[in-house]
Image 1 (cartoon, helix red, strand yellow):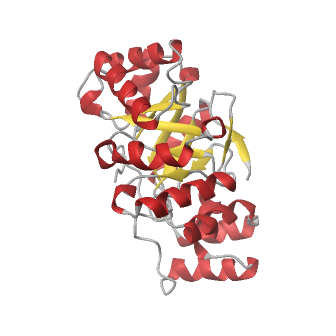
Image 2 (image 1 turned 90 degrees about the vertical axis):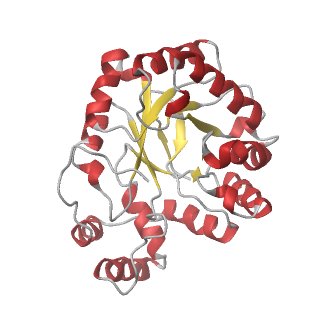
Length: 282
């Protein structure tokens, strides 16, 4: 599995990881098996959040999947904006650690911008790093205006990543968010890279392009899509897979090499769309 330096952390992290959003709706046993299979294949970046299943995904799925293998895992969780006061962030992190049965996270994120002062959240994040509760911190669903506020409160070098919605039919981050983060060495982690159930039909014009490229490589359209979405050094992706077969299909995407011409065909088949100050969120 290809690895890249994750923002300013200095940590080598797999380009493809494992998301766990909505995993509480899946078979617990299958989900655990899938996550463990992913670890075996090198997908050791595991992303979760206190929001997912109201803590059940952390407590009953992720904790079990990483049991006995914590040192292999780049473990990420998130605090809800409603909890993101100074004291609330510290308490939320402690609760996530207990549910995950670990003494530290590798990265802790603010799930999206909220109403509590961002200064309090940042102060709590810095305290958690100082106390060894998390090795790094970052944000999720932050537009450029949010990021500008963030770096007025802490050096950009302290911000590990911005986790954002990114799939072939939602490329809004490429207008401003991605270049802004790249200029400051902040990793960009794409969630829902298959569009949360909106993956292009093979009968659609874009779907036909993906299928054609996939056939040329003996790959699948989803593998082609994933490789396109991590084509730049700053990009990472965390597809969810609660079934082992789906997980293995995702993992194989890392070995796929697309030519410049193929990347251009995909780029033309899935245009960026208009620029906007707002950032799409699922």
